[in-house]
Image (tube, rainbow, N blue to C red; front, side, top):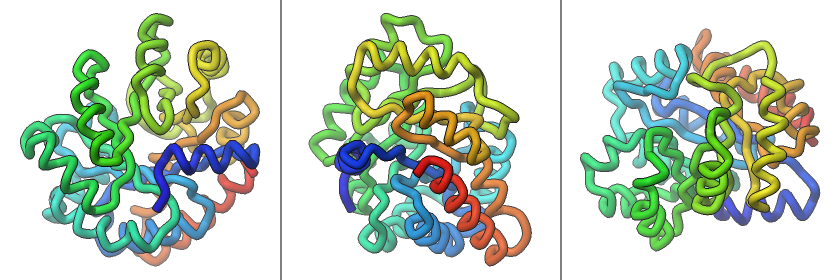
Length: 264
């Protein structure tokens, strides 16, 4: 499995936009998550963001919160997720980026956590509640493990903070399209277009846009506005959770192909 940076470099060399689906690990169960990672990998996903179930997911909207609760109620924990990832990571091409809150990292110990996720084959980290002011130490330690820490830019971020985040973020910059939590929305705010221009003025790093992208038309719009990646979460989580696991897997395959087709 290549690194997140290598993945973006390859896509840029071909003038392509990346598709980054998000799944909550363990919903509806870990066996289905494992199959889903394979499905997404063969259906156009360039990078896959995998959420670790957490009891207080402040950045997540209703669909992902509900998925995390269901997974926790089934007994899914970080060790179970990493055991599954270790089986899959050597079998798929798309790098896996782990989405987790900071408290579980602190509870386990930063070095232990990083060693364990690196051993499992994780290539990147998104930590939505990690303040920029406290990120440097984790970034330095992650680099030693070959893991890239992706930082988030909010629509309300002032220019000075945008510049600082862009400088420190690794792999790519995660541009949040809305003020608030994740979730499906009817349209993407025009403010995103302006933010992309502001980011381009201070960095040449890849930029992925997420939160609220739920349709192929949204993904295409992100590409047209100059984003390097469209990140789609709740729409995948919802499809995988509905009906039987087999039906959910079929739904996310069709949806993934439609998103990739829209940005190809």
